Image (cartoon, rainbow, N blue to C red; front, side, top):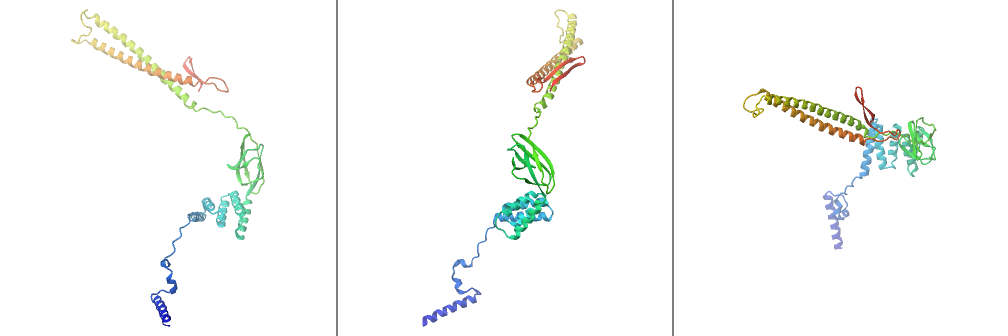
Length: 344
């Protein structure tokens, strides 16, 4: 009896202490241990969802500013992250229809409807948008005269010939191409919405093209420049050589004149005394030496350039497949000088 009263008092004291401390939690709940008062750890954000929300928000902002192409790109990125999101599919298709990419809209809607699940409202909306996008397309039958050719429209691959079924193509100006072992084919056509045209692609071997080698672009200017420098160098060498010989003859004549006026044992031009003829003789000799040096330089430079030009011309000689003639430069003398002829 006494023990029972003691336990009752202890429970009453504990309850009162809990109430007095402001804690409204039942007393039994206070015995859960040291972890009972801690908050749960925050959950780390999903990086995929963060990226998804970023593209969706950017797409909506682009729509509000009437930038439909930017919106299409943003919703396309969001769709790649969450292909089953019905709202994003609807926004992507809306942007594709606004940018006249109805074929892409049909493809995305068909993929969405092919997946199981989803509520009836989303599927009805997708079916309505699919009918709208299909009404703006042309149904094109493409025939190629040879099998195994790669068929494309506006650079987008459609398959290999023969194509079993007609293809959906956006309306407007479109380019159809086929390429295979038999050659190439291309047809440009304006397509109206809702039409069902047939396009025939006939493969033909590409026309042969005349290929001008890159070396021909620099060969002619180089040959003409080299020829000009060679002629000028040789001309300078010849001119100064003639002038040097004339000056040498004048110096020899003046020296002989001075020698005749001197005694046999006397120097031609002694250092003592002033003779104007000796000054002239020294000037003739200096001029003769200068002419000789310039003539030598002209012959060396002109000869070297002429030899290099000749080597380039000889290495450039070749026969063409059409004419079987050698290409090169021919120097032909004429009444007015010389002229160049040949194939450059």
